[in-house]
Image (cartoon, rainbow, N blue to C red; front, side, top):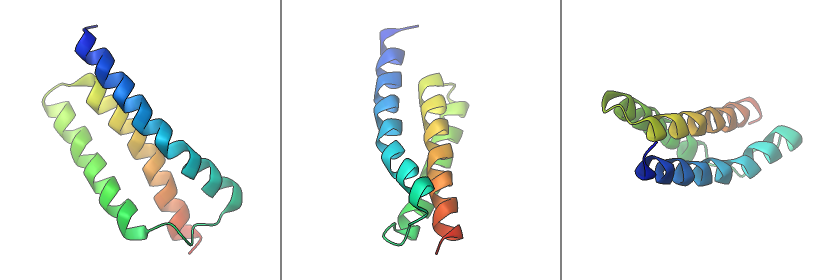
Length: 84
């Protein structure tokens, strides 16, 4: 693994970790009133495009970390839609 890949995984890990508090709080409380639906729809679309891009250019760190972020963002979006 090259140093640039390690940098990518560290950056991606920090971004993924930033989503965890919202995911945990939303799952525990089922309160999503103050979460912006449009923000998460746009964010999920962006993550889908990032994963697609990363797969096309064969960039593992970007694909993996955005894929994990996508799972977390979709879970928040699901809870937002379910608990309107």
